[in-house]
Length: 64
Length: 474
Image (cartoon, rainbow over all chains, first blue to last red; front, side):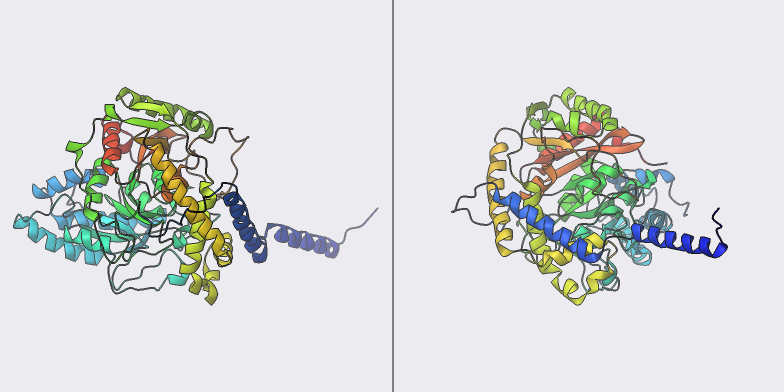
């Protein structure tokens, strides 16, 4: 039979709490920036699909 | 609360309030005090108030009372209180753009729309909350705001929408008779839909943005939130017009002329049945079906239509990233961007600085093609009809990028109508059209540039047969 001392129990609970806190914490900022970069790349890929005639100028001096 | 005005004023339409002021039922000062105190008391309960302008409003109200006494009438907005999104500068008081890094920002001039409304006797009672930087960078949670998540007056556990959160919530709760908000991509349409108020996104360039925070020079627009289509027409007439201080100004005025509007029976309205049958949340479908039936009964010709096939969302996001990155480069470079509330938004702003110029230019060239194809589409229909949003307002603790349950329908319908309409600079009118789970839902009508009177004519017709716009939270 295994005896659980109060000290062991406290250690287990503390490590569980740390693990839970780590799981709940948001992803690191670098991951979020990378995710934003990936979205920009996906947008660029989507924009590459339709053909744009060479003569098409950008919609600068935009007027609706 | 002041007892000098009856409680029915808080949801009364602007023309009625103006008529009651002329009839001397109460004074402008009484009306402004009542609304201003209500905004002060209830605004914070919805996280809708950025800054009360109570004292300045009372001072101005006394001046407007003198004009009424002399029978100097300046139009239907005279003596009517209102609020503005806190991205519009008001001289010598904070303009925060909803963001902590700008919490102490003060300009020494008023935004053009504030001066225009003041010249007509309108009384500004407060600055209204917003999503930080109007959402630039892409926020994940409704809490992305200096004032906390915008709470929906119909259910405070739900979001009021963004980025013009306070403008929509304040009108819905009767804290102001009307408000001015802004849209770059969905920031008028979304909160108006979630809060059950009528709102108008004007044609790009029709309303001066002088004194407004820039998020995207080629996409930003200012527009009104109110209870009725008629009020939106009245407000737009007041705020539209040429302004050489805004490089995007179209140099055009707007006159609200319901008497000259085309009969709605002559109008062809394009729609995608899959929007209402498949894309919207199941609980909303009966209300949307009933709303479409009202339009059909009015004699409006509904015809099935498809949007031209373009990557509207990626094009808009790329243009926004390019312009936003340039505008907020000093904020990002200084490191103060890290003071914003929403980590994904911070990351989006940082990444925007890395957008290749070729991608921005490709999106702007595609935008030209989109404009041309949309112009052809409007050769076959007068107006496009779609749900304002596919569902009711989400809970405030829900991430906004949460995927919808179940597989996506095969027919894209008008899912891209918000980025399409903003890319092409088109006007949109949002009309409350029913309820689902005790929360409001709305339709949006989109027209060709400068077709606001046509959209408003349909809106008036719809609101003459329905009372959704008259309902308000308990």
